[in-house]
Amino acid sequence: MTKSRWILYAGDTLAIAILTLIGFATHKEADIAFLPRMAAIFLPLVIAWFLISPWLGLFQLEIVFNPKQLWRPALAMLFVAPLATVLRGFILNAPIIPIFVIVLGATSALGMILWRGSYYFFNHKRAK
Image (tube, rainbow, N blue to C red; front, side, top):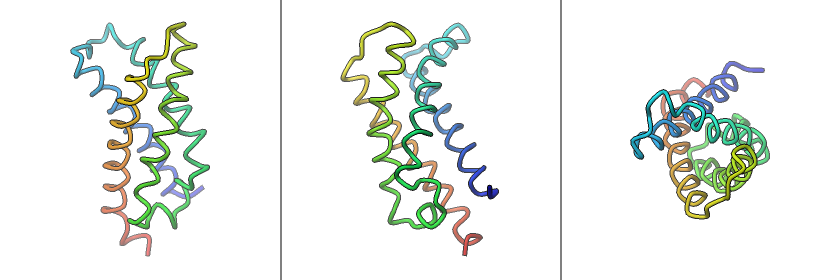
């Protein structure tokens, strides 16, 4: 496996972690006491991301280094968010709230576009 792919895997995971922290911080729940609840969305989100994103080619370097393909992480998150919230619902034995799915999908899509766009911007010259 190439170094670029490892960076993508780690960066995707870190981006999801940051998005999770930002989400909880916006609700003033970023205290260490909320770590179990953070994990209850972070882990399903990571699992769903790594299940769905390969199907959209998000680890194929010819797609990663094509700026016209930055829509793919957003599309992936629109599928990842519902799956992640279903997994979260099973973990917490809680209902799935549709507005949570929509907000999670939209904010995560934006976050992944920012991360993947930054990755492209700083690394595309090395890929050629």
